[in-house]
Image 1 (cartoon, rainbow, N blue to C red):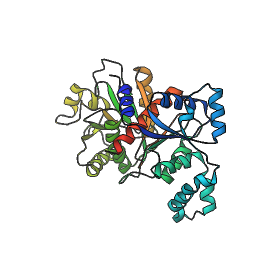
Image 2 (tube, one colour):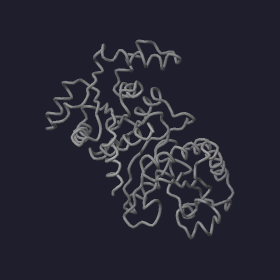
Image 3 (cartoon, one colour):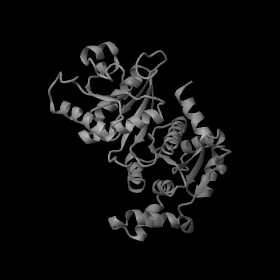
Image 4 (cartoon, helix red, strand yellow):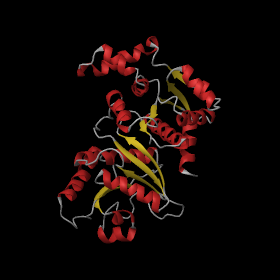
Length: 337
């Protein structure tokens, strides 16, 4: 079965509550319509009810009325979220007036619904920058225990018959967030990607390769040392993690090369999760594999937050938004186990 059919079936079987704060954005409303109609998730929209319904009518959408709508301009309705945000940020010197002003921002109000336990995740970014989406998540939802680095992974589904990865499926990280990660951040990216592989990529046994231009000391450089240190730190963070490094890409995924360059490695030649040493390498790699190999690239899946908040490309299609909602549902489902 196709990866997304599996994820969709899981989402339908364990229905989650997803906030879409960009509620009058046409692609977002079209995605919400499909998600509601197919029973994938319960949707909450943030905005003026009359404006949302007018836009839905304009787009000939018939299920938007089934969504929960939270009006950020209804002072009485949002007061409890204002108080929650004030409690979260009062140590930073915020006033109640500023807390109210910020809570009216749909990105923040959506995250506050998640924080309050009234929603399980948020999807945004069709009309907002990545910085704005993540800033709200950092301030309200914060990072998962033991994690300070939020990163972005892509699920790479290679064409049928690909002999590499887990039935042609890989997780690539970080491809979206941290330009030059430290060894400690690389370690956290690996630990987070281990969870993403299980939650979203349906990889039961993630095998994580910490990539470099060197394999097991074949080259000497401070950047190689950083990857070696990151591998050690990842094992400290999660002693159960199945990881090795430093490995070159071919040694990581090609069995014959792995056996030659890294004999005895538990990962070499078998990796299905690739951790790149920098954002530029990860971002370039996923786009090359997508275009040259014809892979489906799903993401970015934001990793390391205490609850799922996922960012969209501003060039996304309604189908992209639906897929991101499905991935967000699966993250939320796994978080409750």
